[in-house]
Length: 107
Image (tube, rainbow, N blue to C red; front, side):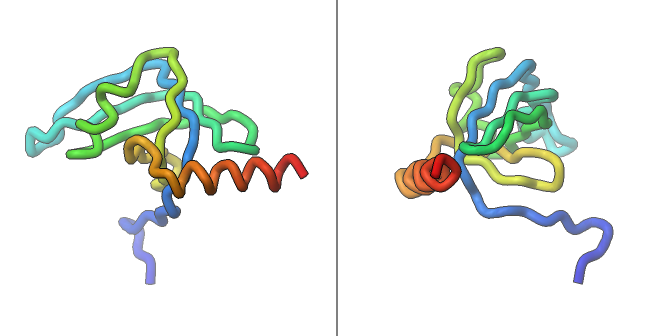
């Protein structure tokens, strides 16, 4: 049962994120989070999109050093509604899954 406060999240996958801006903000509870408005987003085999990307808590700390404005970076991500949740560097199996997805699209 869904209510208005429930967001549907997807499984984690690999995508290239190109932040146009990177803002480090603080929540009401003084926890840092990262906000990248209008970030370039491309999942292997899909056309590029522009989305808001965010990372919270420990995830924000793990991706903070990887992000540079205007520079593409490959990360494990997850859809969180219309926003992209940044999870960190992709694991081996996520990279393998992305390669298989590209092969299927190319065939």
